[in-house]
Length: 284
Image 1 (cartoon, rainbow, N blue to C red):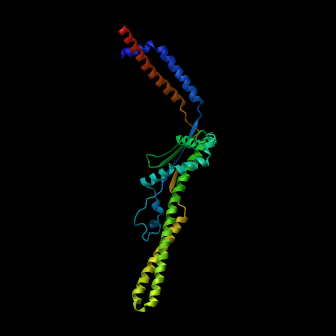
Image 2: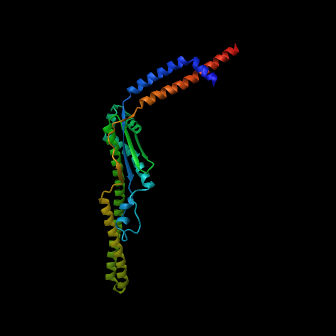
Image 3: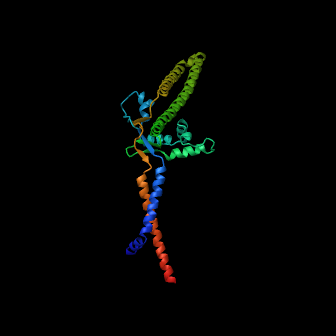
């Protein structure tokens, strides 16, 4: 330890000069970098079962509690949508980020470069309280806020479209079943006319089919109602707003980090040089 202190003392002016140079270079470099501002939106996942057919049209409502907020599965679904390529490409297109980032349109990789730069300034995570945070950084604080809010809106819209499409597909399946039941009723009516001796059995069969038909039509009408009503999949706790304080670069921290790294590397270098000098003296 004493030897290390002795080496540092002998090389102190060299170390000071190198650290001063590192401080100047890092300060100039960080000064030339533009300021970025971060905006953050926070929302919770809604429980899709609150608007499920079995919950809304239950014949015995209140028997089973339906929680307002979604569980980890709903959170993961919303995170997956928020990180999906179609959604991010939609944001890049909406805000014309290729031009915003001053990327030449003639560049064949312009789209890729715009996406890469956006991803460096974008994050979507689940926080410790099961909320979902969307954070966007940009040189323009208003643009950062607008993009963050747009991402939340697009997540909600995408999830709603997926569930709506699912309900529409179910109504089509139910309609096919309804068509088949109507055909069966017509076939039974024909049999009743042709075989009056079996009329009791055929009437019972028709009643059963009619009950199935009424139930299918009721369920289809319920799904149609749900498909035509837009229901949000998120509960927004905090809309993004323009920030007045820059988020990066951290110039003071950057300069101190550069000086510290330079000092450590320089000490390591001079120690090696001193050891090499000793080896040369010993060998000679």
